[in-house]
Structure formats: C-alpha cells, structure tokens
Length: 204
Ligand SMILES: [Zn+2]
Image 1 (cartoon, helix red, strand yellow):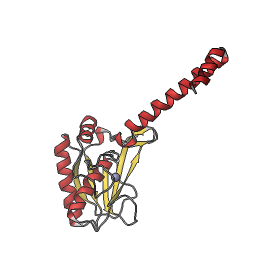
Image 2 (cartoon, rainbow, N blue to C red; image 1 turned 30 degrees about the vertical axis):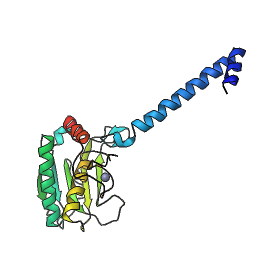
Image 3 (cartoon, rainbow, N blue to C red; image 1 turned 180 degrees about the vertical axis):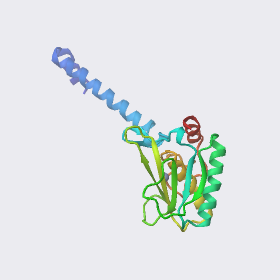
Image 4 (cartoon, rainbow, N blue to C red; image 1 turned 90 degrees about the horizontal axis):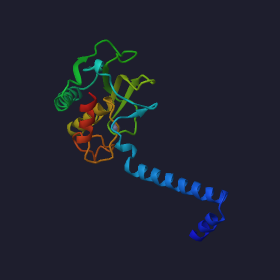
C-alpha cells in the first residue's frame, strides 16, 4: 500500500494530487467517525425539528396545563406534584396553573399550554406520547399534548410524567441510563440528569 502511494508521489504531477485528495478524504472520514462516536444524537439536549431546536419562548411561560375531563385523579395529582418539583428545580416558573377542561375536547390545544389526556392508541414509547405544535420556521413550541396510558402504577406514572414534561419542554432522549430522559421506562432514572437540568436552566 505505502509502496504504491510512494510510486504515485514520485511519479509527480496529477498523481500527487490524487494522493493529496485521498489523504483529505480519509482525514474527513476519520473526523466524521470520531464526531459520530463522541457527539451522538443522544447528547443533544433539545429535540431537533426542521433544522431548529424545539423550545418555548419565555413570553409563553409559565405553560398552562389542561386536564381532559376523564383524566383519572391519580394522573392529575401526579402531574401537579411533578410540575411543582420541576418548577422548584429549574427556578423560574415553567408550568402552571392547571385547569380542568370542562367544555369537551378543543379542536386545537390553546397556545401556551399543554393538554393532558388518556392515550387511546398503542404507541411504542413507554407509558405516554408527547406531541408538539410548533413554528416550523423557528422551532418555537406553540402548544403540546401528552397522551398517557390509564393503567400505570403510581411509581411508573411519576417517572412517565417527568419524562413527558421533559419532552414538553423540548428535551430529547438521553443515552445515559442515569437520566429521566432515557428512553426505556424500566432502566430510566427518576430524575433529570445534571446536563438536562443545566440546559433547562440556561434556556428558560
Ligand atoms: Zn421519551
């Protein structure tokens, strides 16, 4: 291999350019591989959509929350508790107040709020699904919906709730098992990682 490169180099002219081009190509591939290993998608704190990070505008906060009429009492109580602990941990008031939505299902979740309901369709994401409505030009989140499974025990519900509210705030999955944002429910920690907490504090 090296003899071949040496021959090309000694031959000079266009052959030397080929050697340089190959060296550049190999160098770029190596840097790309290292980047792929060290900065994997799980390391990004906020979700990426349409080339932007999904984040709320501070003027829309605190985010109001609405409980769908048939949301069980356990789900409501857990939401209130998790919201209080998040507001406490991050500093500025992220969420609140919460309201019972008494007038049927809204056609669209009001701007600046999160709508909590029971999940009727089965999805792969453990325990719940969070969806955002956002501005595609900026990544600014306008509203969110969290659809929760009805049959969750108190302990799992607490973890699912904190994980989903992390998503509501724009947080992506974390590849660290020590984070509440880890994808698998059974191997998930029960709290935000220091990195996620830092990202939330810096952003909001
Ligand atoms: Zn998730």
